[in-house]
Length: 164
Image (cartoon, rainbow, N blue to C red; front, side, top):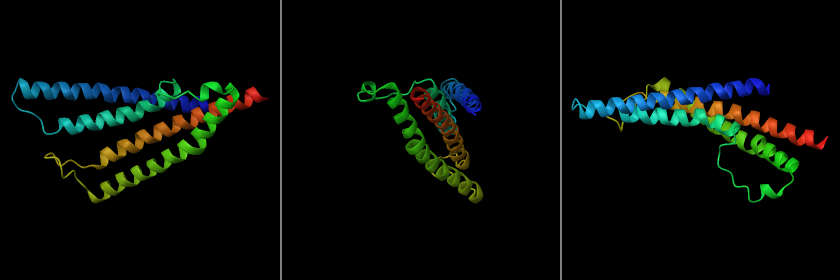
């Protein structure tokens, strides 16, 4: 199971990298359009924000797996490794994962509601449908939740293995 979750996390990280590559292309297009052609786009800022948010969330699980998130180890560094793994597993599986799933459910419900009603962004002159933004948020949260599950199970297995 962990291997499958890790593969899903790697695929989400690759999708996040593609979002950042697309973000770069969108920004380059906007700069060229604005300064070379004198015709700025109405869609580039919102598209860039969507790609940045989606890329960030899609890559978050990979960063978790690689230990790249910022952590405060003042107390944890003083604990025995087995207890540290147990606390990490408990936090990830009993606190953080349920919170993440709660936010995921809200994001998915918001995306579905916006899709059904055809809601558009009233702030922007583009007036684009907003459901893709919420769907991207929900997809990123789902991928992050998969990674949190994998890391929680992995930390729990390390804690039990060191115990037995």
